[in-house]
Length: 351
Ligand code: PMV
Image 1: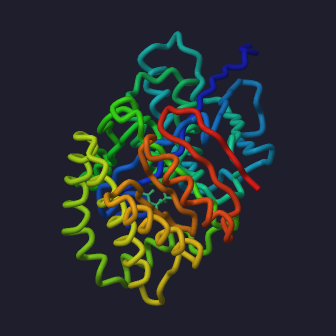
Image 2: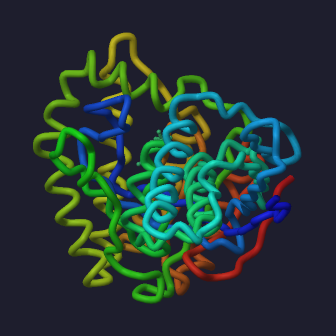
């Protein structure tokens, strides 16, 4: 009998969108209403580490330990990832009968975040990306990151962008089966090595309205949203790709802030309205505005996801100005901050 335990580990980074994914055209397959683009944060700061193992002797089914606690994997999204990866492994086993039948064994996953999961920072993206990549490594799948992004997308939409470092686009695609809704690399982190991200932890509480139900309500009730997906996002995707390629920070920053505003305006336009930002979030916006006004040019850009926490992008040469200005905001309700960037080690301070 096969008594071997097969094992593989990987890490996956957190990504923060500068052109936002907001809206599903197919909730079951996690197919988006628009393309999106993100910046991957440094794994030194924020990442999920996942080990996947399987063995013929694992008798009691698949399991996932997340930060030391047994996690529910019965949800349709997680099951879709397992099913898809097993099918890809089974195809390899069918083609080469000498391969061990890993696709038929129970999977044990152990996952750890190197940042406080409770801090309300995007963790599902890194989580699903690491889960998919770890199992793909275990199964020795030949799939490219883009091919794996098709699987991660089914776990959490934004997770498809965490299979890559750097600047990553998720192309919405137009096929009904989702086979062309995947991520690709716009530019590696090394393309723009002085890019930095400051994460302002405004609230450690779990978000009030989940992204899934917020998106559903937006698609169903916001009139502005139609304008956003038909005109605003396509134009912003094009400008953002140009800005990244040209390392044009002012343009990158303007599109980033306009995108965040457009997304939160659509949330406020739903009926009833959804508010993710609170007063401290708004103070952070004003702080960025005043930094840029004082500098006489755009040196900082804010963005907010489905919660009150703020991410500020800036270039390393502006660090003293940007970080200095934020120490005021830090004193008034921000509970912690994290400075990070694609591929650059940085400091952490959590009160
Ligand atoms: O991947 P989800 O379902 O958690 O949705 C993420 C939505 C935003 O973070 C608000 C935007 C984005 O593109 O990441």
